[in-house]
Amino acid sequence: MGLLKRDLNTEQTKKDFKQVAWFYNMWSRLTESKAANKVIEYADIHNGERIIEIACGTGVVFKEIVKRNPEGENLGIDLSNDMLAKARKLLKKEDAKSYELRQGDIFELYIESESYDKLVNNFMIDLMPEETFDEILLAFYKVLKPNGLAIISTFSFGRKKVNKFWVWLAGNFPKLLTECRPVEIKNNLKRIGFEIEKEIEISQNTFPSKVYKLRKP
Image: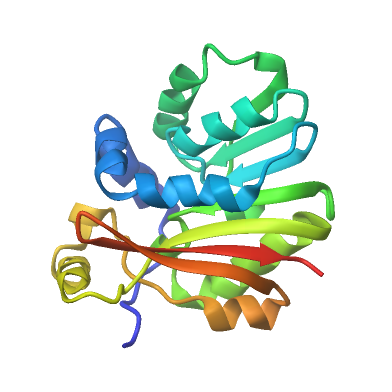
């Protein structure tokens, strides 16, 4: 099945997430929390690591990273200042010295190469044009130290008949999903050089997602 076409429009994406920021955590609990739990499990966080989450959104996963890595360095980056405002509120009880939240664009990611032990990215690639997948994944690859881990989750096609509803919705009413749509990135991951250690398909309230655990050799 081919991927639905998406265009790169940073300003429109900011507007879309400004509109949904107020209820995004409710949506996340209903459709993405199982994937989020698997992301944390795959990340296997050890206190004292350097961890970056790109597209940290409202901070649901990032908060769990910070809680498990209080003596490490935790950086959360998101395009949307409205989503970051929710993240700052969520993390206000955590030690401010253990994390940083920063507005940023994946295509202007000025991060030192081979500087992070682990990278997390949730439900971002499914927003992006297919022709940018390799560029995005290469940026992820570069910031990781050798033997570093990347944990990536995406909106997927799923394996159950009920999952097809979301494919239909993404195709016919894309604004309801902030332009997200199902993607498949396995070939891209291999082309960039990631080793796929684990992958799992998850269906939560019929919403399909996939989580990858990836190693940089």
